[in-house]
Image (tube, rainbow, N blue to C red; front, side):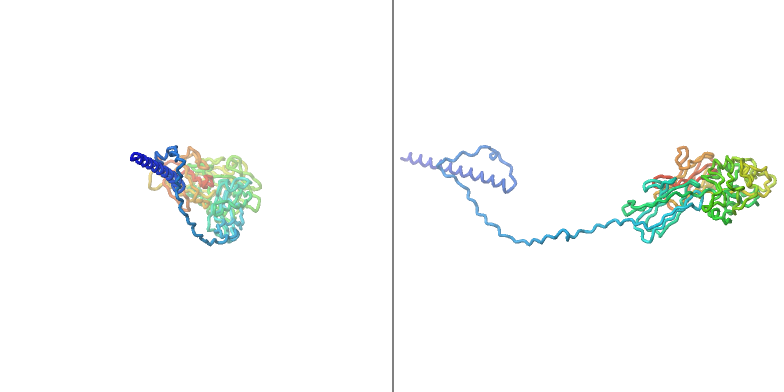
Length: 477
């Protein structure tokens, strides 16, 4: 009997143990399912990774169910939702608009006051709605657009009511066309105005008063006499010119080198209002073919009247120097002679080489030709050996983004008209530009040697605006 009760007790314990194990398996599966839904899955253990389920519970043992906790519903919350604003009433921050360019202006181009120039005038109006203006030019009858041509003037706010300026070029009696471009706050060209072609002013040739001995004070003194005669003239085309050169040769330089000719040469009484009395169309014609007589019968003086004078020249028929120059135009002595021309003879070369050598004590006139204004002055250095002192004054066409280059070649070579040749020496570049005068000492290797210089003004895109040439500047000993 004791053995029977012992076996029954042992079986009961086994049954109780099986029931406990089954219940434990049910809870473990419930815990894993709960963790997957409510939180981040934990790192699985080796036991959890087994694909096998626990042993089945015997059919005569009821399954154990995990109690489900009672969940109380959350109290309802009432929220006040603002009414939707109709799209038409939504306040959108205003974006400032770029004001449209309103071009209330006039734009005109006429022949300039000085040789090889045009006169440009712009009236802006009282309240211009633009920030910047560019004036561009190109040769010929077709005006450039706002991305081409040469920029000859750039203006930024604040503007005056209007502006007039001289566009100096490298062509006398040459036609150029223009466009003014108007830019908004974003730098966009919103408007432009085209100006048809206008011809630049030609060179003027006149005869001075006939009371000059061979002592002119050198060629420089002859140029000063020409300037004084022009200032005394009542002819506007003559009086407005500021730069003149005497058509003279000396022992250092031929007249054809000293006098710069960029195009047409006309008489002193020519103007834009009447037919121009043309002596020559260009440099080659002037020195080689004689002067045209259409319809002039002689070279006029600075008052516009016919001259009957013989004229000091020191030149042959092609503008070359002779030995008869009144000691380089510094002597009025009868001991020296000077070669002359005849202002009444326009055919052939007699106008410059038409007379016999004359004693320097005689009274004669000189020829004067207008020249372009120069940005460059140079002289032999007074205190530094082997040097030349340069002074550069920018044209009024300068802009801060433009630049000036100075080039040099030993005489008789000439720096190229656009400062681009590889055989000339670039000695100075000025950038950025301002209206200030720049001085520079050019230290050279050779003493008492003549050099030729050129100053070139470029726009911000590297296009040549204008250039100035100086010839035969002697380095110091």
